[in-house]
Length: 135
Image 1 (cartoon, rainbow, N blue to C red):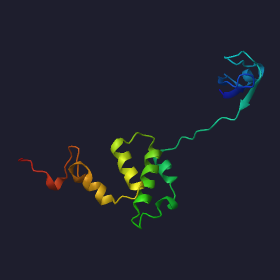
Image 2 (cartoon, rainbow, N blue to C red):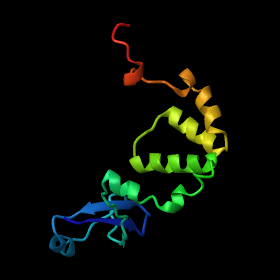
Image 3 (cartoon, rainbow, N blue to C red):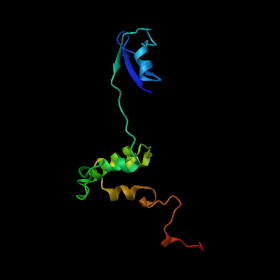
Image 4 (spheres, rainbow, N blue to C red):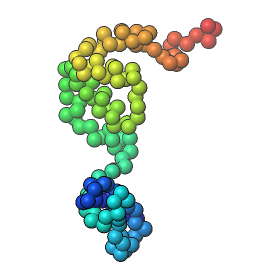
């Protein structure tokens, strides 16, 4: 069930066509939905690879970790940005702010101390050491 992408040579419109089979694609001639022209050029489509979360993280090489031992906040910011991008999730405004500040070279300890709760926010979770059932 191939999907092919085309660009119309008349109006430069782009379209994607799903075919039930390669045989159907070979028998048919798609038309541009904008101008009804049959003068279409097939494009090379982008491909996507499905990888596990572990596979995405494995793609981060040792070069991505260089500079972290040097306590370079910019390197830490770059790595955090890349990890955030690899998850494909919206990490939130606070994450973006922290990463931006690291990328600008700000000291991580100063960033942490400027966060609500001094960076020790627990979001309702406490460690076993600080839990007092009588409180």
